[in-house]
Each structure stands twice: as structure tokens, then as C-alpha cells.
Length: 147
Image (cartoon, rainbow, N blue to C red):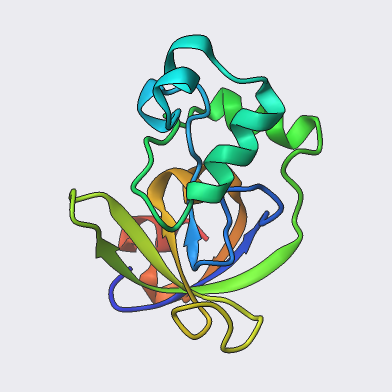
């Protein structure tokens, strides 16, 4: 982004947007996210599985869903994704496994373990972004010529 930040409109109503300063899209069906051996082999009801995984967000590195445009569109069409929150993306970080996260200043003030900063995974940003606003100088020159 050539050193510019991004105003970001997103949906934060999912369990993967945690109060622990992490925003991810956990894969509820991934065996490695199941937890106990019983949960892995016998399975859990969907509600329990989602609750168990939501409780792990921020305390464990969880396997995330591979986000597609079809998933984004379906979530928008069925109102699972709505524009309910505006934030400010100002940087990029990587976790211990090399996964990319966007540094996000939340508008809730100095809350959470990172004083109002959230780490939003690339999957979360792909899935839950509704719009962005960028400085015009952040555009590639060829794109800027077209507007």
C-alpha cells in the first residue's frame, strides 16, 4: 500500500473475532481443531463444536478455512456478513508459523490484551471485508489513470 493505511469496513459478529485481539476464520471441521480424542473420533454436535473452537481463538493457532469468492458471496447474500464495524488497518505481521495477519486498530478504544489492536488473519480479511478506503496515491499508477 506504499506506506498508506486502509480504512476497513468489516463484519465482527462471528466467533472468530475474539475479545483476545484475534480475528480468524477457524475451520470447524478440521480434525486438528477438534481438541480431545473423543471429539476427534466421535465428533461433537455443531453448536458444541463451534463453541469449543470459539473458546480456543486467541489461545491456540487454529487451522482456518480456505476462503473462496463463492463463500464470501453466500455469506453476504444470507446476511451472515453485514457491514457492522469500521476499523483501521495499519500494518502486517506474521505469527510463529509464518501466517499473515493485518494489524487493525479497533474503534473500541484500548480494549483487549493488545490495547485496542487486533490481529486479523488474511482469511478473515478476505472473508469479512465489505469495503475499504485508501489514499489515492496508494493505487498503482495504471489503475489511478483510469479514474
